[in-house]
Length: 119
Image (cartoon, rainbow, N blue to C red; front, side):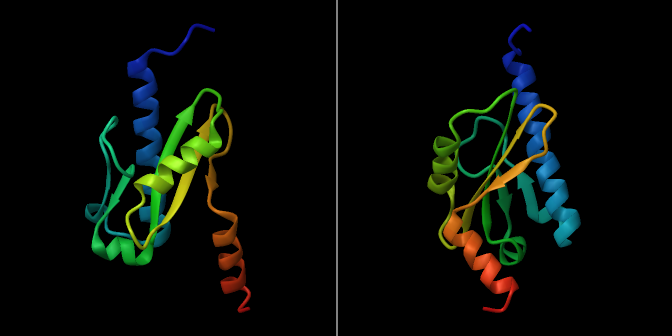
């Protein structure tokens, strides 16, 4: 299989970012004007949340959609480095024909489990 063109790869990444944005807006009832997808190649977090949306979703999103994936820890570290204060970094990854995954720190995962189970 020939390598994917850079423009096609960027389009795939842009569509994935916009898909994540749409899912968060629909599931959490966020205002579409309060969540924007950062242009490809820009520095910082991939989705930009306004104050109202950040209160509902205190996470910083780093998204990558690739043909195959290596470098999980490096990508998660990018999410950590780009996360504004008072947000939890989440790295969302998808490879071809696979379900997207959300990667968070295990300590935060345990916090979510404790909160859900009232411990």
